[in-house]
Length: 443
Image (cartoon, rainbow, N blue to C red):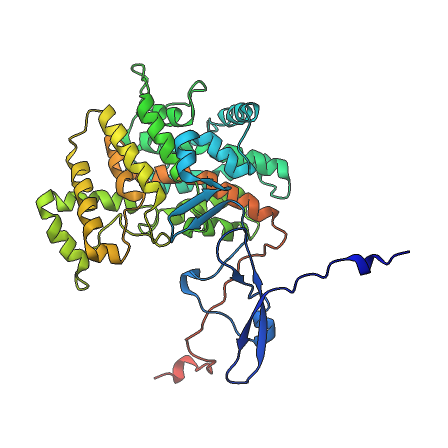
């Protein structure tokens, strides 16, 4: 009988990198991991056990915190893929529900799967009626993002049947509920701030149409959703659905790593998104364009942006990840034109100013050298303004879109057998141990 071991092909040697401790002369080997695309990754999990050292990486910009199959970004070449599909293809050919299914399930749905998914989401769009009273506990001038944080977290007090994260069915129900209810939560936050009555979801409308209806309809008269505006909003939701391990997504994963319930985890993501350095960038773009005011002042503000001693920054240009043209910005620019044409706002001064600013900046050697290209936030604020969405709701729209990405990432984390509770280390620079001095003996 032939020995099976003799017929096997020897395994290829595992790649690794060598680290040398110059103080002791010791040499350590760290495994090198390869993804399906993208740069290789040094596996530093054995680092402390072998060397007694930690790494120091503020912002975790050089640290991979997890393994994921959901979203891939190549910032140098301006590439964004969801489950392998280019964001441009999804924005042009798919709708938000199809993209949501892809992010959650890993594959594009069949006609039957998409129909069922849409029906399942539609059945969960209403909020528990007692949540009406929860809204009334807020001040009328409360920021909608504050309301979003509170109401999303409070869902765990209403839906006890979907809190067991060890049960795949309960995780699915919680996921569907949050995707379905977040537009209702958002629209009601706006209605509450204006003093208008809440508008309930309509099962005959699609995801984007339903949100617009709940935002702008009143009981006084029928409201007809503009299909061009609805399609533009749907595309914006696709463009913001997920963006790899950004601050809010990492927050959701970190909260989820402790075993927290899904509603609390997504509420944590909303809180992180609220920060002006993350979800508030499109509002900052609109404020900047308003400050510039006219085309003839663009050179003045470009000069200020180049001046290291001037705190002014050109908002909507450049990105923490993209060192090329943000692929979402091209789609957003086209969408902006479609909306303004449809609404008869082609001469919108802010759009004309934005286009001229983009043209000049892209021809300026300073911005070209530093690869400060327009990002997705550059046009989105103008689109929202044209739609009649107030500035206070800009980040809320971001949260509505990103909820599906957060949920997909949260589910992936729960199912990852290698995932551990998040516990970053630190470089301590405070006092070493000191002796306690009694109060009456202190000077």
